Image (cartoon, rainbow, N blue to C red; front, side, top):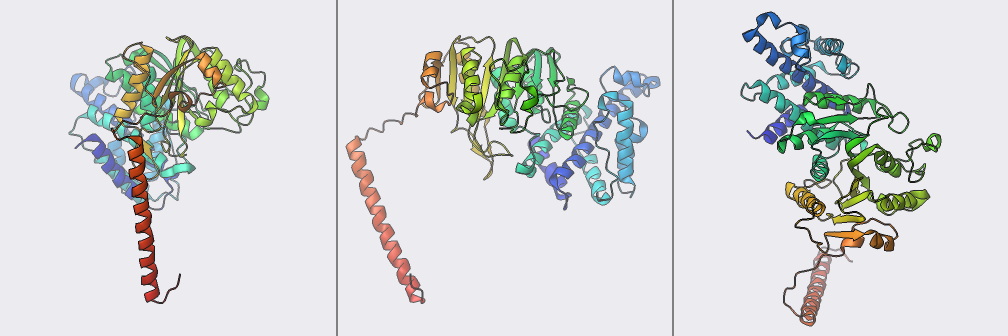
Length: 497
């Protein structure tokens, strides 16, 4: 069975058990159990290996810690929990297991959800969810099962973001958007940073990129920060379940007011800050040294985020940042001045306009800013208008296809490498500082790329207009006939209009 089909099937089964539980609450029940099973499976895989080659070390915690495997006490192992799934005390059993794992593994301290024994959680449903995850069958291959559990966790994060819609989902950046950003800046080696990391999707995709391009994941160091305590825990679990070592700080914290990585200079930054955040605490930060390009306004954090990220970039650092489109043209409260200063400092390498409906939390279209401290094309900026990309997967949601991602990323990379690139009307355009000045430092790609040229169909303009006018007259005539027929039919049953 294909992996995505397996994930969908598991989601459908798990979601059926949700009953009347709110998606935001159910999320933590399910994701906590997936994490618990992953930790237990990883431990048991190593335990079985030691039992074959060195049984005396099977219960030696150092043998596990040395390989980055979490130590799981006997009463916290999945088999112990699964055997008690039908007992009324199953909530206490799960809470106790998570508590023991936290105590035995300091890096998980304060991370795991321990509220399965609360009265409002139906223990019958909890037992059925445990049974569901107990029956994950991927052919008896432990390593493969762990990989599947990692993908299931990521898939479920996306589904919960979709379910919560505008009421939640801030913790999750759609996978296709993350993939585009990663494919553009290509974080092969060095420090990768996300100052508003949500559930850690940028990091997961970065490591996937390295693996898919035959790189070494040990060449990447992950640094992140997240202000929401619940989301910070989701990120810690998400990275642990993928085997990704990271530094997300010892707790959740506000990046503007409590930077947990004050000396960090990143090689790559990937970020999707909260759109148009109107309450970020500017009054207490007016003298902050990060505002080298101007003081961001109190009523919108977009340029505070950009300024913070520029400050965090190393001398050859690159950033991919998702922002609402208003940031491209706004002149409100010093934002236009900051944008002008960033452009004149030659930091803005590319702007990509994306289509609407890509996010669960909002339908507004967004853009990706590519910032670069060491641009290949000095004094030049690439504009890409990809608003016509993407495929609707539901009435409210659009996804970028792999072909869309490849088209945009290849255009940027070819331009950057000075090979096989040329401007395409309606899609991409290289502009220099003088041209951007003429547009008053507005960065909306549509202003630069123009309108896509239509293919010449060989029909002379006059003949086409005559044909289209005749077609329109015919349609109007048919419309009048249809209207008259409707009147007759309604009159026949006593209705007058």
